[in-house]
Length: 248
Image (tube, rainbow, N blue to C red; front, side, top):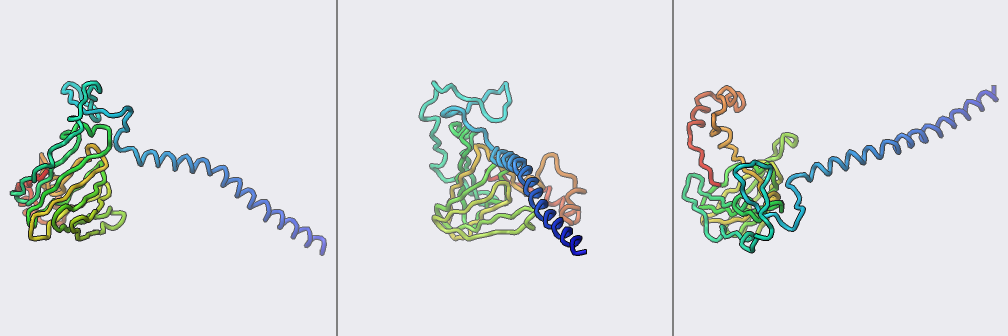
C-alpha cells in the first residue's frame, strides 16, 4: 500500500509539472496572433487622412471626376500663395440667431492643406453667442481662447453613459474635443469672444445636431422623431418648421 501511495504522489507531481509547460506552450503559440491583431487594429486606428507621398499636393478641382480627396496641382506651378490663407484677418459676422460665426480654413478654402492632415477655424462670438452642439466626424479639435470667456463641453458616447464634461475657459486656455463627439462653445462673458481651433483632418466635416435632426431635407419622419425623443407630434412639427441657422 505504501508503494502505491508513493507512485500516486509521483504521478501527481509529474502532472503538475507538465500542465504549466503545456499552458506556457499554448500561450507562446497564441502570442504572435495577438500581436498581429493588435498591429492591424493600430494601423486601422490611424487611417484617417491620406499620407502625402511627396513634399506637398496643393489641391485643384476637376469637375469631370469625383475622387476621395483632391487632385494635385503641378508642383512646378505651385507658389508661396498656395500656402497662405488670409481669411482670419477680419472678424466674422455674429449678427445672426446664434450670435456666432465660424470661418473655416479647410482644404476647400485653403488648398495648400491637401494631404497634410490638418486644418483650422476661427470662431467669433457675440456676448451670449453659441457655437451649437455639433460633431466633426473625421477630426479631433483643439481650441484656444484668444479673447473672452467661454463655457465649453462635450458629451461622451453611449458606452460611457453620455457623460457631459464641461469647463470654463479664459484667454489663453486650451481645450480638446475628441473626434466624433458632440461638443459646443458658449460665450458667457459680457464682451465679444474669439477662439481658434485646429483639427486633425484637412476636411474634418461638421454635423450640427439640431440642423441635421430637425432641418434635414427631406425631413425625417415625425414617427421616428416622436418615438426617439418621446415627445408629442406637435413638438416635432414645431421644431421641423423652424429655420435652423448654419453659422459655418
